[in-house]
Amino acid sequence: MPNNAFKASITSLLMNIIRRFKVLLASRNLFHNWLSAGIRYYLINRGLVNGDIDVKFKCNNNNYILSRWIYSLIVNAYYDGLFKTLCNGELIGKFYSVIDLLFIRMVSSY
Image (cartoon, rainbow, N blue to C red; front, side, top):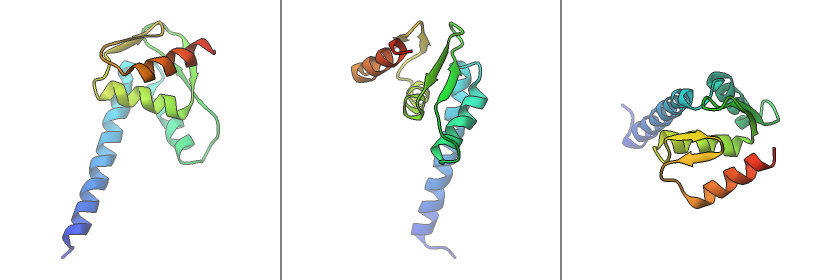
């Protein structure tokens, strides 16, 4: 019979996998190419491919090239309810000003 530490680690692992899957599904509301962007993020994060993630936002059909860090930040913040939508470079909702500045800087550089 497994000890409590093993049970806790298995539970933590399963919770992490479930959260990642829910975050991926939530990205459907942000991007047209949510599945391919999610797969590309996973491959980049695991070191299997190099490069950035090309996403196409639903609200304005613009393509942006995001680093894996920015992609993860946007998708996780959306899943956590920190903002409702992302249109024309504007974040609608309660969001941290540091991330606002990072996103505005990233969008203006492309």
